[in-house]
Image 1 (cartoon, one colour):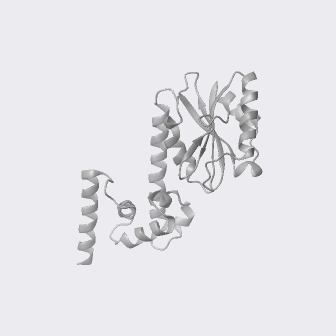
Image 2 (cartoon, one colour):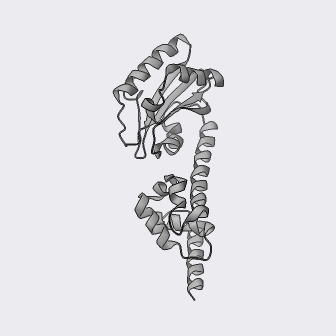
Length: 225
């Protein structure tokens, strides 16, 4: 009887999704729907609620480290992998949209991808978005992990990435795991140095974006470049 009840509930979730996507779903219901694909024949609603309570949201669950998810009782490696696949697929789709987009003239054109790519990380990461002469996206390259103190970000590393890609224009981007969208004095100093040196190399630095899980800021838009 219990199994029939669970199967009926799962089918209702699937039907709701097929008819209207995730509109109207609570975060825990979206997690539950994902887990039904990886954990068959078990009521995963309590587990989904626990995960959302623990990590704060659907995105928080998908952003959580695989190892931490895999060690969660009742979730295991299969469930953790299913959640991370969803996140990775969303990130790839957003990147492919950015690659196929019109020329990048405003931060909004790529910020959805950058926010997912960097905003939810627990460690600082500095990257360069590489652009064509017409400001279309060529790719993105990570310059440093763990923040400037543990892996110094230098103009040489940034320009080396641009030269490898044949990129005459770029956007600097890094995340603030603590949530602050304001640039630090080190952020501003690096930006000004890169912009100054780039002029002599005929490379245009269009912006420096800071992304967090809560939002983002553009140094160019704030007049800080």
